[in-house]
Length: 204
Image (cartoon, rainbow, N blue to C red; front, side, top):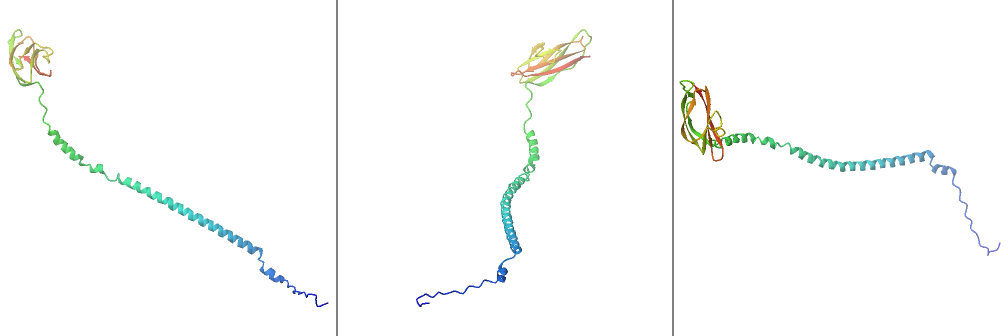
């Protein structure tokens, strides 16, 4: 071999790893299965924890609105609870005040027209049953413009015997043939209202 030939460097072959170390670094299949299950359980627990947090947040958010709703209901219940109607028990006080107010109005005015005075007998002293006896009545009136005298009626204006003065002393004849008889004096005012004075005369 000449000196011009390049020299080659030969690296010593690397010794293969012993089989024992290769087997020592490899994990057994059971250990890998356990680790996978552990990771899956951790992931499930994390998901459950997140779901619980979300649920709590939703419940707390919803719980705020019911709290606001009871507040108005409480105020509504408070509005009936004050008993203004019971405090309006001054109504009894109104009743006493009503009683004086009932007495305050003046008594109604007398009916118009009206008899100021009326006098006369209701018995006729007859000597027999064929004669007539004079009977005298007298009356005075208020607010009367017309008057009538009637026999056998309670409304002399409707069934008049004759017209008479509104204030007068009046004489008429009672017929003794009748055991009794009704006589009426009726007054009328300018508004057409009437008042009656009826007397039954009985024969004696």
